[in-house]
Length: 115
View 1 (cartoon, rainbow, N blue to C red):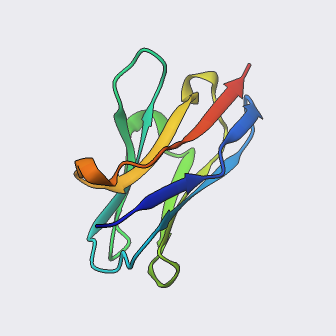
View 2 (cartoon, rainbow, N blue to C red):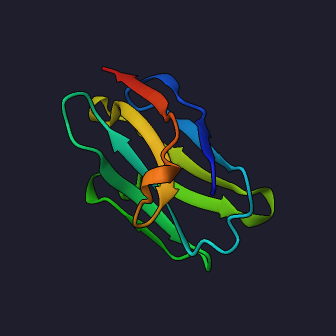
View 3 (spheres, rainbow, N blue to C red):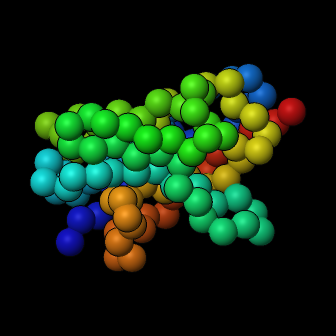
């Protein structure tokens, strides 16, 4: 069972940047695809970005060219660099596998972007 812990959220102004981290309790080397998801108030959780073990990435259209996902398997960590933040990026951000596994959801990290 992998435990995932997100951190790095906070309050940012529109146009600002934040870097989220996701630490895994065990090696993620064997997990092919890791991903970030988010859930805004009153909305369903949505996928944001994913990265394969080989480094192939994919992004939600609305974050493409603004967010960058990366992973360091040796550190059991996945990152999400968020730039040019918009108020609509406000949400709780989670990491998980892709597709997500129910038992892997952590507490998430809150990102709030003010206009």
